[in-house]
Length: 376
Image (cartoon, rainbow, N blue to C red; front, side, top):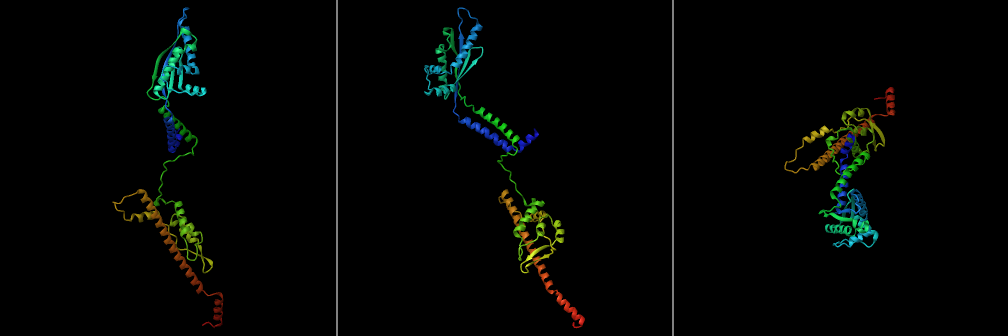
């Protein structure tokens, strides 16, 4: 149960959307359906006592049997013809097609027999209050005046109207609030089933806004992404593109102390286009990585903005983030330029040292002269 409640809390937006959708659909459909007004009447079937003195129990059973027959006769086409000729202002128009007329009449009338009483409750539904009341009066007249055609009891059976017609002031169909409540309950059941059986199904209407600040880039993975992106886009030398894996590995560390031993032990190669060959040059200076503490200190020294300016939190956050990124890129470019100068100095010193050193033939000639005594 607790796990289910946790799922509901986690997917509360999905639950809300499903419940709201089913409730809204039920309310909308009920609101646009045609309204029906209700009028009710009560009919009592009486079995008269004969000369032979039939006991009351037998008479009651006979009346109950007749009421059962009459409750089914009401749906017939013959009874509908008697209703339409009743002396009441009935504006209901039925089609000439017998099948359609029967369907419409069965939707308009509804009967219910009360057991052991001989009483029949008849409900009439119509498009207006006046029409429903007139139709109920016509049904009562047809049963009381022409009911002898359907029971066969003659003068020994009497049909009396005991209730109605009672017509409601408000529409009986559709029941707007009941249908809306049923839609709400159906939405709760549907949302529970979706959360329980479909764990991956998630509807999000209000996504959480996540703002990444520059100070939060303190983990190793964040520095790896930033350093590798800058190294791919900004690291160039005059003689050609920087080669070797040392700098790329160095930028992937989170602090200067982590990669300094690695730089002392491992050289990297740089391609010189003028010499058309590769030489391994050691690096004495390591690449300096900006730490989050230094950024926060430098930002703390900045002059605060005036108090009378409007402050928009989201714009300030994005602006600060972009400024910090630009400062990081600028510092990285400066560091790479310094490293470029250092590499050029190393290359020039190496060339000079190679030019000043004598070749093997010159050394041999000098030794021979020294042995012969010709050396000045």
